[in-house]
Image (cartoon, rainbow, N blue to C red; front, side, top):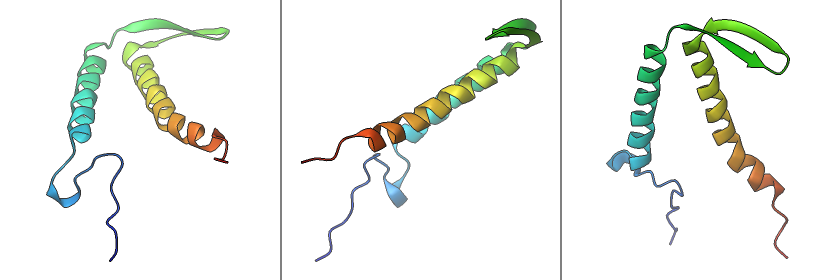
Amino acid sequence: MAEKSQDPIGAQGDKGRSWRFYLASGLAILALIFVIQNTEKTSVTFLFSTTELPLFLALIFAILLGVLIGWLTPRVRRTERPPNS
């Protein structure tokens, strides 16, 4: 008898979407509203350079950087674990 694999993320397959999908969607909508409401120009300093750009561009960059870090962290941790002996 074949075993059914369980989804570690908690997705429900064809039965519906998981709570994580709705949480991520809600957070994405809040982030989008926050970005849209902050359009004034601001001074941004990174390392040794300073530039002036619309705040929404800095916010989008910060959000994308956070998403990238969140996506990469589990993958890096998984590959650095020592093998079980």
